[in-house]
Length: 281
Image 1 (cartoon, helix red, strand yellow):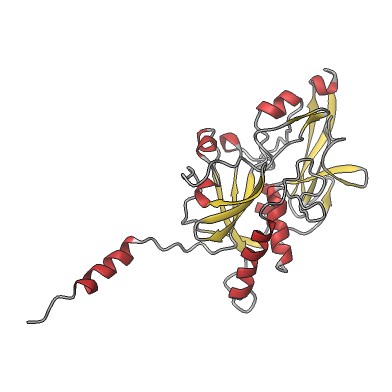
Image 2 (image 1 turned 90 degrees about the vertical axis):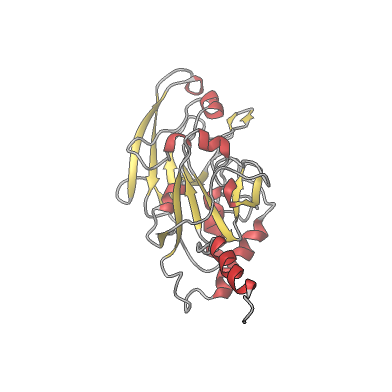
């Protein structure tokens, strides 16, 4: 009588029980700010007016990060560029505030080995890990690094891909008109001495930087031709250089291995002597 090979029975069950994670390393992850809102998705492009609004309100910038495989992500948060568990992409406290996951995207030709070899995909991870420990660009003077060594969340994602030879979002400075959307916001708070102050805010669809006008924009933003600009995550999310892919990894709820790291244009804002650490991601 033949012996029953227990291993031959158990091993397939073990394999069946272990989920197969198909999301490729290099995937770009995105989520909204509180209440499922993200700057650029609606017709009203509003930014906080006062220091208190910026400090205690929701800045609605959303967030971006990079999946590096093994249920790990790298993203730029208030504490700087960090590596953490993918489940910390949307920490528990942000889930409670209605932050929602937008999805994962990859370059449109990522499945073409003639363009994206395994070595090139590994390079994405290597470049991202080389940025861990660098600072957060709190005043948004650079945003995509690396001259200052500091990044915003979406700037980090863009930089890593550019270093691997792929442009997700073309460089450019949108000031209104075709190729984006504009909105005139009237500010009235202590920052304007309680007088009406009109500012033109924009969201770029086709290039990186969106122009904004704000009573406190003298302190923050990337300057170009006497205007201030911001690279918003939703602009990168919209690019047709990437396509949406299925997310089969945990991206919210947090883990015991790390706490919440906050959002991109920081949802917990430090107060500076001259005003808020602007539209702090």
